[in-house]
Image (cartoon, rainbow, N blue to C red; front, side):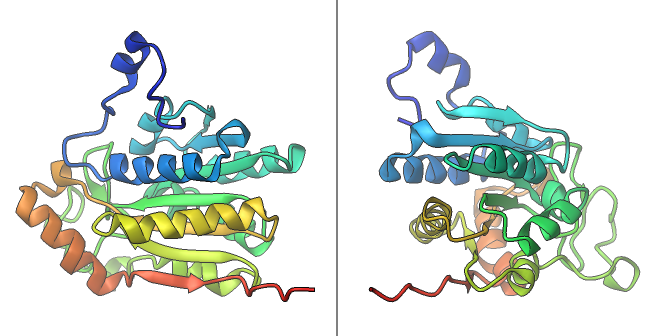
Length: 250
């Protein structure tokens, strides 16, 4: 199983529970991905790539072939693997920094070329591993280590709308969606559809997951969930942005 329930106890003690901060959303996103891998029966075909940043802590999360890349380079690395081994199911996992900042050019080009990989991005509105600096997705007025008075969009521009951007540049047979850790059933359906898009050889697939970072947000459990469920979704609208058209039966 992708979530490694049958591995030796010593190995599981070293890799589980996960190494993310208490309350972090990465664990929920990855658990949901693992369930999809198991239910689709693709564990022996998956190649999982993770970025630098908090996402690198997923390098030993799954019992699948895994590669950890340079910051922002997960998308092109998995693209190369997919081109060399088109029978593999290639999953690129990253945060909003790896996808929308240093790795934005790779995301844009892979999407426009309709590379047949799946990109899964956790959006927690800040650079989590390096101390909570402002990220491309930091909300207007949101305080971070580098925006102590709140993000000023007149000076920094508006937060990046990743799925909307990807949906605008991908061909019609791509799959693009935004889910949230506040609704794991919906997120699971989205991730599964994204993987099926790749399994069926249809095209590029991309899912953003709204995630939590209580360590850098400095929020308790109640305030963390309020921010994810109410404040983030006011700006980042949850839902499918592009769905491949169904093929007509011959």
